[in-house]
Image (cartoon, rainbow, N blue to C red; front, side):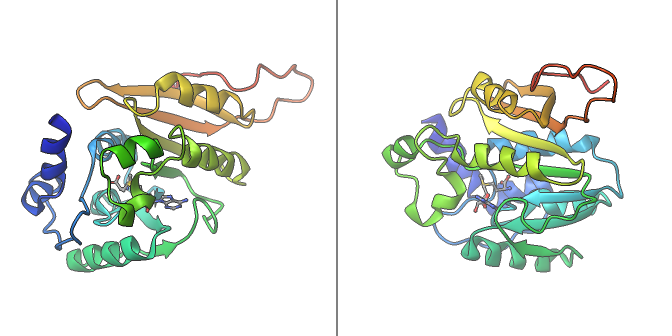
Length: 233
Ligand SMILES: C[S@@+](CC[C@H](N)C(=O)[O-])C[C@H]1O[C@@H](n2cnc3c(N)ncnc32)[C@H](O)[C@@H]1O
């Protein structure tokens, strides 16, 4: 019931405009402008300073997070894997007259080395759950996270671990689909990554994981344990 109500709000141009302040183009039937994780990521992204080089990974049909960051003066690039979604995102960006490049790519392929931040609201709904709820097959790239919801999350963590630079990643995940502990375990399995902070949005049921690259151990000192959590401050 709650799910259906939120779904219709997320498909409303009027609600999208109210929340984000953009005059949004119409979307294809069954598509949506945002979800709960979009809202949590938008809040978490307020810490990103103007001028920062940011990648909005999986920008989605309205490119809302990319546009929000662009409006705040960030040097933002949008990336999207799905051709249809990318076409809609282009139209949304054009409508705002935004100077914001959009690239079709898989995860961090082609991402610049000097990237400072990456935002990702990945597809995390377990396949059987999404099919049971009748989520549209045409928009599978937006929601299908594989058998337990972690397929794209894991691939993203691998890509982040392999990135040559030192970007801070804000990864948003709905805890009703993939529990916090599961994501934290996936991070801990990758020694190159460090979880700096986990920010909860209790009303939305979303966790935002703030991730970075683990600095190489200083020579002459013993390396600490792999994975684990560090505070930002
Ligand atoms: C849950 S939607 C999020 C859309 C938007 N960023 C938001 O927060 O509302 C996930 C988006 O990531 C895209 N995506 C999925 N897998 C991807 C991948 N491997 N590389 C790039 N984008 C991907 C999907 O097509 C979809 O647009």
